[in-house]
Amino acid sequence: MVADLVERDAQGFILTGRDLLVDGRWPKAWTADRDPFLFETSVPGVFAAGDARRGSSKRVAAAVGEGSATVSMIHQYLQTV
Image 1: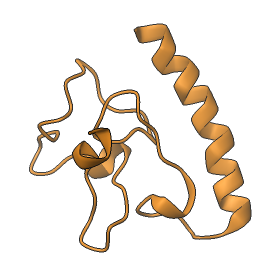
Image 2: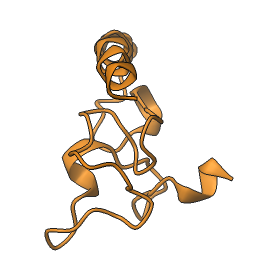
Image 3: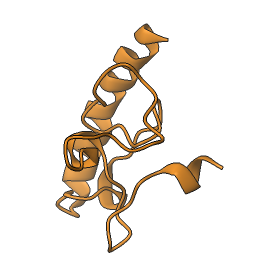
């Protein structure tokens, strides 16, 4: 199940982008030959934004902005597959 592969921090927030890098390595679930996009989780092609994501400001306006930014990253992802 994809949800089991998505990396989380100790508080349960989803790790995305550069937050996935630990000791210079990407998680095992990361199989792409590229770095993850800013809001991409440890599973290539799965994105997270808003309150569920580690490092978010937990504000509605910020979540809307992250969601909007994520759309362009999804378009970039789709160009790679």
